[in-house]
Image 1 (tube, rainbow, N blue to C red):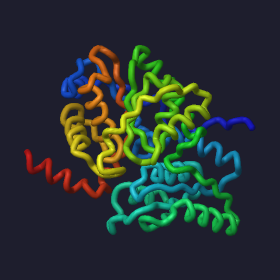
Image 2: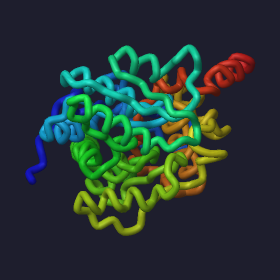
Image 3: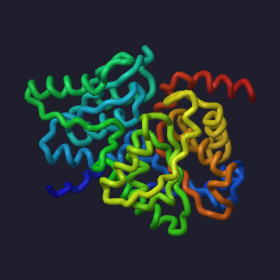
Length: 317
């Protein structure tokens, strides 16, 4: 079967910007650090839109009328799936795990604004089973559901980051390392397939049990010979979604040097991993490093530690 051409959901390429003040704060030279601004994509920004361009094309080729996906209550992927469905004239049902704030802030508010139907599954219950039930209910009602995976991370979705790898190669031909948060694995897998494992440093955020296995499997499905991954596991902290002291410092540093807003779940931990890699010599002076900003700003406003973070910082001013 021929792979369908991706639909267009954003504007490409995203900017690649120098970050000299952040570089200095992290102990790098001023021209060592660049930021790939995938936080500036459509639908309130983030990396998932690259994956959705391919996943939605596949769904439409199969005749889908409704997109069904899952995630946590502040899932960036779910929010962007809702927006992509709206743009393409499809419906969306989001099966979200957790206990949402009664005010439904952040990504929840945006998902509802984009017109999605939300199905909230209490913590500990089987999300995949509920997704299957929802898809069956939709099919019985005459719809054609397309179930998109957690985080959009299949080989199809990961093709979006093959395109990003090509953009980076053109924008900064002498790049040495790309640092990226690793959640469901598709973003790092696409970069590894496009740039080689030796040029991609992933920072595990604790979203899945075996991030290395997922990344390797997805990159292999894209035709890459993976070899040994560069994947840090030292920034997970107490678990997925839990703000760490190092991520708190990274978020503050990025905001106060370059005006970059990071989130507690992914990019805050990724930048903390970059800082640790500089400190232990994994990333060297004089080499071009790219920090891939994968977005997540709406999730910051729905994060349980957002108010605490703001209060702590205000107390230090």
